[in-house]
Image 1: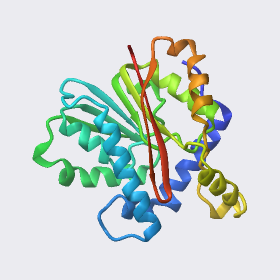
Image 2: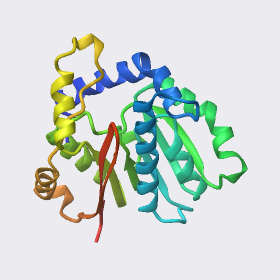
Image 3: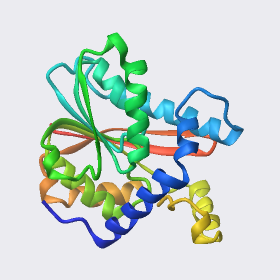
Length: 238
């Protein structure tokens, strides 16, 4: 397994601090059903649509399957996978968000759950988490460069048997503008920067990885709802 790059480790530290301290309360509200501002409402709607898209790419029956929710946040996707019978390993860098996911679990999963969710705090690249049938990384790679996205996806694929679903920030005019404007704010006042990625370049780099020689891009879909823009890509074994 390739070691994480310095840029990956640096960004991981920024994300851990941001989501566990600066933005914890905002994400608690965003991932609930309480009223939020117009901008955040578009982000909530976009995330809900993206989650539905990714879940539609997974088998309806996940009984006996092991699934990694890489960057689980407050656990919404993990709960949906467990309802289909999956044995879910849900991990996030933020102890605060994982604690909230635990608190919501009984309410969200309830008697409908036929699978199981095992929550962890830490890095989803940790080999101690084991191997999986399916991996889903929803919006957990959008803050990384193309090179680090490729390295991360490659590392996850080495421990995955059937499919790997992930999202990235597509290089659009709006995201590029937001990226440029964001750099004008003092570093202490801004969230970790979203890194726009060109899909063609990403796919070309993925094809050059020997570890991905048995994998092929399957489905792709873009969700754009106001201030939420994200692109999903599925890699699957033929």
